[in-house]
Image 1 (spheres, rainbow, N blue to C red):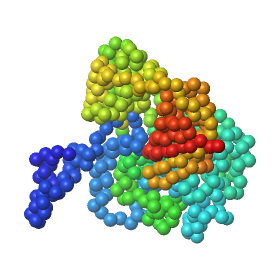
Image 2: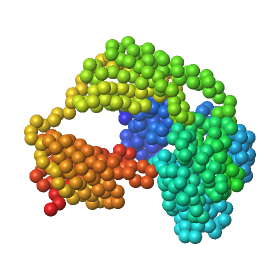
Image 3: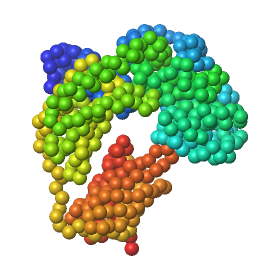
Amino acid sequence: MPLSRRRFFQTGAFATAALGGSAASAAPGIDPGPELYESIGVTPIVNCRGTFTIITGSLTLPEVKKAMDEASRHYVQMDELIDAVGRRLAELTKAEWGIVTAGCAAALTHATLACIAGTNPERMQRIPKLAGLKNEVIIPKHSRNVYDHAVRMPGIDVIEVNSRQELEHAMNPRTAMIMIMASPRADRGELSTANICAAAKTRQIPVIVDAAAEYLTIPNKHLGLGADMVAYSGGKCLRGPQSAGLLLGRRDLVSAAWFNSAPHHAFGRSLKVGKEEIMGMLTAVDMWTRRDHDAEWKQWESWLDSIRQRVSAVPGITTEVTQPEDLSNHAPVLHIRWDGAKLGITGKEVEEVLDKGRPRIFVAGSTGVRPDSMASSVSVMPYMMQPDDHRISGDALYAVLSKPPRFEAPPRSQAQPAMIAGNWNVHMKYPLGEAEHRFTLVQSGNVLGGFHEGETVSGDLRGSIYGDRAVFRSRHPIQGTSISYEFTASVAENSMAGSVDMGEYGKAEFTAGRRS
């Protein structure tokens, strides 16, 4: 990127020249000021989406930054530090005890380790070889999610239950704990948190609640319902360090979770949390008890109203503000709706324009895809917005909706669609590694259906074909999540080839040939 005169003086260019090197060949240095990210070619984001790790959660509070800086200037004994922090967290949260972890996922892993091994060092050293140890974690079906991996890491088996009867049958001497994902579904029904905790208590099985992105309730809602532990992300609503989390609950279990973590030599050693994050997180919890949450809510509403008024000046725009259903990303949301055919732009296209704009803006979702689904919308979440972001995003939304750039539907061949129904052997080539999959395709004109088999899991396939170009999608459920695939293929009589978009897992290439 161009090197300004100011940035030139802040780089090592002169130092290189003084040592006999070539200033022309020296790379620009990192700018530690407001253009820190730009100095390495990364564009910051105006966050109208909420607290998501992929966009770095939240912004740490000034008090947290100050605490982390001060903590970095001293040495301390870590067990002494965590003991003092545990006492202070207990005072602040009204929980029995607390520790700071390297994120909420780490809290789940450490809690699992504590329920498997306690503080028995011989058992701690055996993990993940669980023969003879408790090796099962029960998770109700409504709580299965992509973060299950943090619980599965030590090698346990997940036992999924979908009724009170299944829960009673699943609990046995091999059960290490029960994990519940906080959500409205966990607040009701026979597998509610309260009902699960009551059943678990009769068998002395610990229960942990994953409340990662939730609003921290004091006294704690989940502990009050009978849970033994609850885990939170530190870098979301608490606005602590992004790489920190909280584990609150029973002192014996939470303390054991710490002994299964660094600096101790156990399975959790790799999930290390530093003194800076520990003190930053403690400060964030302290600030949570001091923040004016009612004033924050009113500010969010005023920001949304400002955006609403700005975009409402565009003919054909309607708006609605909805209230949160639960404690995760707990804030009102503005929904902006329009007819994409009349305005000449869809919601997905608006999202794309804002993403590529300067400033760069991420919204909280969109609908509307050309040419088949023109009913459009974008949503704005104020939860992590900063002062003036409402004006920036309001102006950007007004500009793109009032004078949209020209978009056209992707060209579709009018030729007779190639016939690709049948069975196919598929060779997947990832950036690192290869695999053999299979398609079973059915076809009715341009419409494709069928089945996609992976190495160990499979799922339905849906898509379309125009001429010799096919696009189809599949989704493979696995554990608490699913793997999505979008295939774009060029088709010949007995072969096809193209690319695969796997979302967060990147892209791959594939080739396929008919099976006889």
